[in-house]
Length: 260
Image 1 (tube, rainbow, N blue to C red):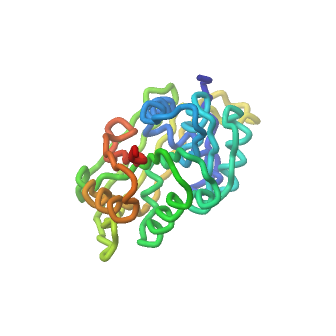
Image 2 (spheres, one colour):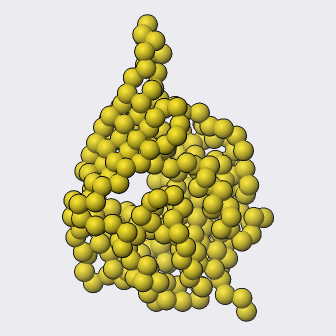
Image 3 (cartoon, rainbow, N blue to C red):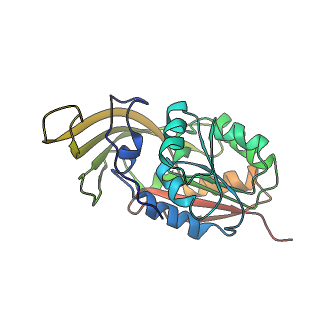
């Protein structure tokens, strides 16, 4: 697989930031791609992938891959940076899947944390059922792995010395949903160290970028996800396994079409 280089972040918390760099504060994109490839049953079949672009780039060297993201900025950067990806599509994954008969689906990097309503789950289930599928991989934040007041610190081994912090403030339960949704209120902070300054500057010194923000992410128990699968996707075999990211409070759902 190719080695992809760190690119300097830009701007404030928005699409102006180079999220490829930020994502590396808490995961190794190559490791995740290799784990996904291990989980896939059929490496000959094309994959629709929604998740971190750099992870998609590594995975695209092993399988034919269509990358999907709702952001025009992300999709444009992905096209420019990662030529190994065979296809890049701008749009919401649930909308794209309704028109795509692709057999294998990967929704990774805990994008399910943004599914915070019953409607979101109804849309993704409808999109999966729109065509026959062989395998669907989705990872979820694990409610049983975190508590209010917990602090999680991420640190990579790269030369840039990236770090990330998650501070869990409180959880709010969204009632009357299947699956049961619990929303975590989180303070997130990042430090990207050892990044060179502006190329137009005469300074040779390295610089740091720090920023933080408050956010809300959806967490789920394993039993609630299994119950959702039983009701919404009854023709698929549901298997749960550990996180795609080492040390991350999450778990992986693999939906497989039953034989016979």
